[in-house]
Length: 287
Length: 300
Image (cartoon, rainbow over all chains, first blue to last red; front, side):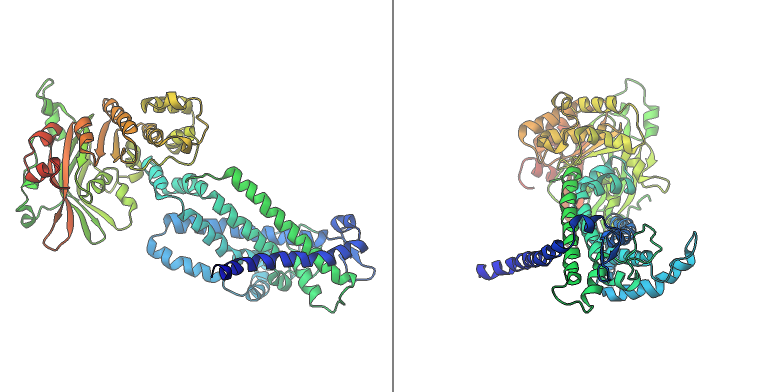
């Protein structure tokens, strides 16, 4: 019995290691053709054209812009939702509201993609404040909708962290004449910070890795810009678009997919390491 | 909000119908009193509680408590588990407001002011009436930030250093922590943590300190330090303490209220005040047989 259970636990670890290992050989072959420096600092991304350009920065910038838009929505609203649920809402409201928010997480991403393209994008075009309005494909619409998609995860995980803060700490703060908001902002949130940061990091990872929404709504043009009103391609959207094309196995174009995949892995890996340090530094241990 | 004493409930409960006359001091009576008059008449009443009922949802938890708390005294609330003494204590700084479904009726006059009146801000109430809890609950912050928490919440920015030192000194903790104010409060021992919680409560300069079994999580030595501290503090503060420890009540308190749980006809357990008197009287010649039974350890 213990053997079966161990196999269950080992499965995900083995698969993860397998995925990482499978990334390595094509990536190594890719960098035998393409200079690493050119890859990391080049500002033109056209790996499937002739002559090919292998500067990855435009799709890194696309990923960054979309992620920032998503986090700008998901973090404040997700944390606000969590604080409302754990500190303000009556138990009956919480009982209904939390599952309803979690339903948002169950909507297929392809639905979110078309929601971004057909519903949000027209508003973005109409309400654009300065200069020419963006085209129908733009990073902002994709980012905003991605924010809505990861909001339930931020809210739910942050709420779990807040709910784990001992009730005695809140009582202590109330007994000193704190208002509800002061209890939440000075006691509950700081005490739950490690869990909230973990939720935030997971949300960023989801945003960096999300593919379908950007594939549908952000446009497919690599574009080195910080303007979220423009069409962009992200790293994941490139992988999906190139992977579904007719690249022959072993070609440099095919290996490009793995090189970008490895870069994605490295980015998320270091983000996790970084966040662990942040958490260790700032969290308030209450046990 | 004043409770209507229903006559049928009043019968058969000798305690409630006859609250000890010398305790029920109103402000008017105090105004009439002559300096140097007999001891009870010179005491100022901080809390005057009449006909207090507490419901949790539909369940009556505490019924018909009449009790007056005098200034600069230690009032002990004793009684078996589930007799409603903690629930009662939490009515005095409106902590029960935080429990969904809790409902308080009757009258709690605090210096003549109806604590449950419509204009009363419960946050303001808790600034004036501090509380120390059963389990030490320091915030996961530094010792300094724990003590400075209350003043900061109340908008104070300057003079915090002095205030923190003063509060820690009053709680007999300053000498032990003065060199490690920036260290986490959770590194302190249980007894030190509880004294820190007392310092934290004192830092907002309250009028009353409520203590809900403050020593029950501490060893005897730490407990006795807290007891000494309470006696010291009553010169400036009014203290109401809930305790399971009868020796503690006998040692530190001036007055003792004995609560018990009554089984009503419906089968419900309801907390009631049985007897309230000078601590010495309660422990030497209680007037109610239930008090005597509890004091002498025959039940409870």
